[in-house]
Length: 260
Figure (cartoon, one colour):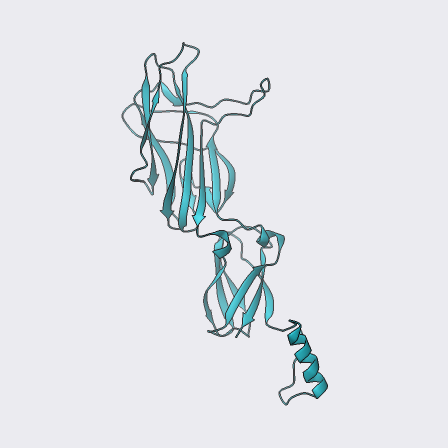
């Protein structure tokens, strides 16, 4: 804190000292705030200098805050999956969380969203056909249990080469979906034969190559951008509410400047 003038005024020396501080940017209208954790989406800022019309400027002030990113999640199936029957829909299951911040699995099929916005949704499915003739798989997306229009795709798999060499096709797709906080996504499909499966391949040290997931999905926020996620959602005399992405990172500290 820098020197303040007494209510009755100060000496010329005190006034000059304080004025020089102001010219050099040394003022008392600054502070820091550390965001709440536990996936909180708001943090209270208490400062007696805040009024309803104060402008509050917020800047990253820690490594964790500077590294803040838009919500994202990457999930995979590393065990394979077989359709229960033909002509009926099944939901792709996920057994691994590869990367995640603000996007998470609530069970084996649902990819949940903590922050509203428009998300890029990308899936890749390692389809295998062990049948003697060509088959197909229809794949689509579901939001909160309902079909997402125009996301359906049909993938054709040729007949197997031999009993020990099935046919392989990667089903890949990307789209944009607008989601509200608390929404969830699922990848669904149907096959023309139960010989069509999602197949996992373990890492091969002889080639070498990494493991090949049976399925993977990436969900990441594309709008709004990361720099707009910290903002003042309300304020009154002596306090303000800072809204932000769902936070579960410790020591995410921001500096603030009060103007007016």
